[in-house]
Image (cartoon, rainbow, N blue to C red):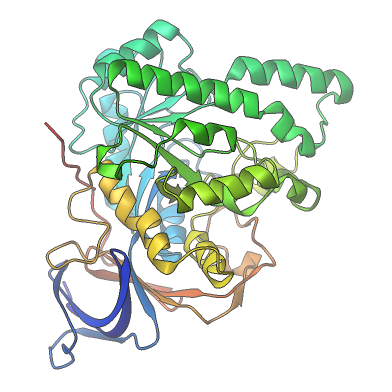
Length: 447
């Protein structure tokens, strides 16, 4: 593997920014210092004026493989993420077939080993009747268990209370949960269908997938986690009301209940449905500007612990259907870091806090082995950014297989110039080097 010398970078790491050089050898960060320019290396990157972050770790993506590859593939979606600075991802089990057995889960790992440019892990999926299979999983090699309390396909909605309690009681690994009450949603949907039929205006999406539906499910999950001492991580918080469920009085290392915010819930509000329509139809729904602003504040004050994307591509043809048929989700991982850097330019968040929420805390929350920080001896997962190189999103530069982005037409102020994955320079100024694939993430188990 080629060695890499990065000189003159502004390193954003562990709560501070410092100018230094960095040497990568054999996939690891070998040295960090102020005068390494005399070190020999196969590749030299002059990073003067640029900012070096740990590689982003996205804890929630849907790459659509197997079974839904007309929307996206592990290869295409990981590549899009790499262009945006994502060096590691955790992918969800609602594919076809669903990853609800150890064998089906390992099939996804085998495929990623062949094609994924980024480092990878895949969640095991829960159903009402697969607890025996869940208990076979080696969670030193699997990021966690995913439960859909609402909004999934096939038999992946865990709606049997005895099954849910059994999982919370018996599973010792991290449980990541999609929390919406499907019964409340179904009742709301019936009301709007009675008025509009299938062609419901998308502006009513946050009324159908309502605050009540989110809070009801999240509060019940938190109560159950407290009852059994379960390690619970609630994904894509979308309402201000849910924030009362989370604690910022203790450090992340001591939390048993954690929360995630997603880019779209921090960026858009219900006012944007008029322009974006189904392109910003997500589950849970994008809600009010009050909800959006409260979520952002909770990121800053540590009630919310990590920032992710919920990257979930669909084709434009699928999105163009009437409300009841148009799927929820959209591509985001290529633009997650530059979106957060726009917030930095607007004075809403610091660079150090971005690194904390998108790199350090994800590694800490999932106990990822030797990643998420810029430290000597750690894997060299790195992203270099020019903070002042504006560019505009267009269909021509969208890399997700679906070929569109909710950010089309927006000009970002910052640009990712280099992405290093496990010591391999995978991306440089718009060009990819795919000679080496990413690695399977490892997790430290607390005994």
